[in-house]
Image (tube, rainbow, N blue to C red; front, side, top):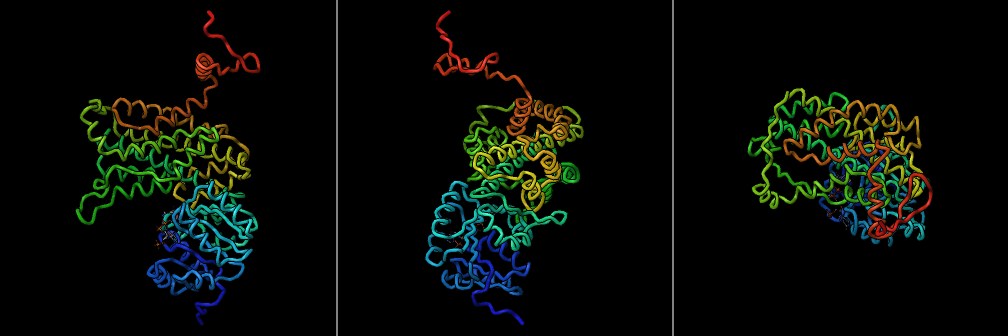
Length: 475
Ligand code: NDP
């Protein structure tokens, strides 16, 4: 007999039945959890009820009726746009919720807002969790990577439903309690920062093969599909291969050639860079990827600059196959270095914000479901298994040997790109990060001296501790 679709018995309620909310709720229903949905738009509620008709689901576009469906103490998740919408939903909910109820913000909220909201709600007796979800539409529907933060007791209440609906890798769920307060949203933000850099690196490899080697879309499709079978394998590589094989149904041309080369940025990448700067953690590959998104939208300016600033007339003259192999190796080294920067940021944030992050667990839950999932993450997980407190992956001898084995490819690809005038900002900044990180001596002694010269800012010395000042006007 089918369960009644009413009554205060639904285990979790979702507010916002857009792309993510609808799919995650259906995923939970697939795992036999009675769940209810709310959206201001009745058409979205009806679409959800229709799609979930064979499951124990309910829903309403009336907030009071929706809250009435939920089992007490209630668990209400929201997947609405970050910012004002989250505060507006919380305010509306407050008239209906009771102490002990739980609100979960599963959108891409700024972690600083999450801290404020958690404290304010806790003072009213309402539990609040900031939770990152990665995997896009398909991930939400069939198994995302989930990064829940907040009080561990709150997590325990929803652990079964989150574990059941998350992706699984080798039987392990891609979800774990990340840490207190805003830890979940912070980790999701860094996940997205890494995502920005990986996408920029892949797009630079595309540019090198398209404008540098003159490869066509069929060849590019094959290259990315081949790369996805080896050490570079991962979700972004997989979809890149598929993209080059896709035709535009209207024009019948290759769809990629019909898409404008302008990709805006709207939050998490920039927040990652801002947070890294605030915590004095170098993440140049992420920073430059955000900058390149900003540059990409300056299409009209670039059209003018094109005639004023001609590209060097240097074409590729080497062996194409051999260059593609070097590019594969360079991309691998770059990706390892991007993960190194992201994990180093997490390591510092963990102590600065008191998150107590388990970096091994984070690498583990990123192996499946999320956009940055890649074979590389198995190696990264193993590094943190050996050394949980490692400040940077490059300090692990086995990990750094892999980077060292590929670094010459990175250098030669960068050289070739410079020669041909192809912009590879992420490749170059990643290479410079490597060169600087492994350099015991850096020319920053000169910067100290300059600062002391013009502003009496003092400097530190290599032979004595303390701070020193020189009267530079004295000869
Ligand atoms: P959609 O635009 O598809 O859905 C947003 C939903 O929020 C809609 O149902 C909308 O309802 C509702 N909503 C908006 N404003 C309000 C409000 N003030 N009060 C109540 N409901 C509101 O967005 P997504 O599902 O893509 O994204 C949701 C969140 O998930 C965002 O934070 C996003 O950054 C994050 N996210 C998205 C991913 C993706 O791949 N799309 C991946 C991971 C996270 P209505 O239709 O009535 O306006």
